[in-house]
Length: 326
Image 1 (spheres, rainbow, N blue to C red):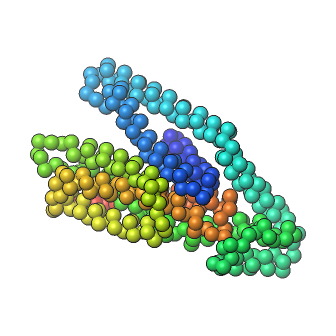
Image 2: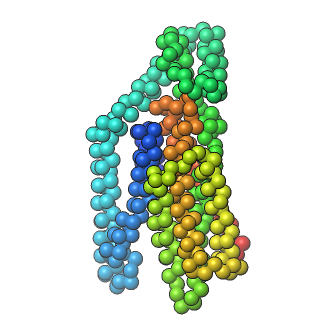
Image 3: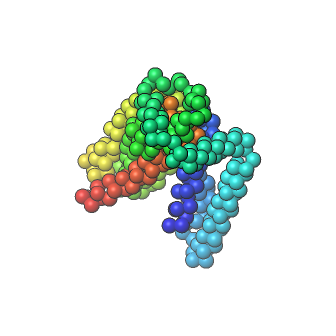
């Protein structure tokens, strides 16, 4: 529980940094999500190098466990120091964090000064803000043109609630939930697959690694073939769902795709999963338009993180329901 909680906090923090630093470039979200997926490769290499999980005798098994967890601890320590160095020495990260802290400070000052404003001026400012956020023609206007005596620049961040962000971001969140939930449901059922060769039991392992590396390749592919719009990503999300019923029909021996059919199907399914998951993080800030600031972008990133967690739980629930019906 402690490791999972700490990992979730670090995962969310890095997601916010990836969305805040270089917000107009999709390279950082692609690099971050690719690194996250590639970390499983380090675990695989470590397990193979130490013999962890093999068929050693009792003494050798204990030694392999100590070596495996020792190497993993060193890798975690290196990752932590790299994270601290990134936060403390990167000029781009520091500048972005300073801008975000400045926006939060302005919000605090605005909340303290709000009681001293008369109700009429405050209501007029909020009504004007609502018109600016909902009108498409205001996307090119700048909040810096407002007079400092008006509370409008600071209210723009405090009034952008998660409900407002959901209304702007729900297509991205929906695509992410569908993509991740279906991927979790399929991946959790790999151990139920059976090879057409009755003497072979390696198909589940092959599918696992095919999914791992195909998903990894799909993430940097967003830099070579960047998604044009959320609608384009939504079409890919819908199209990849065709494989889900075919996969479970094969698991239940109702439809036989064959070993190669399963392998190529999982490869395409996982590749589009990585592509969609990364493309969503690249396109989501564009949905904020006139409310895109150093405060609202991390808020939106948090909303996407929650959607991702919900999708993982939904995928596991779907898997359990399907297993109970067998």
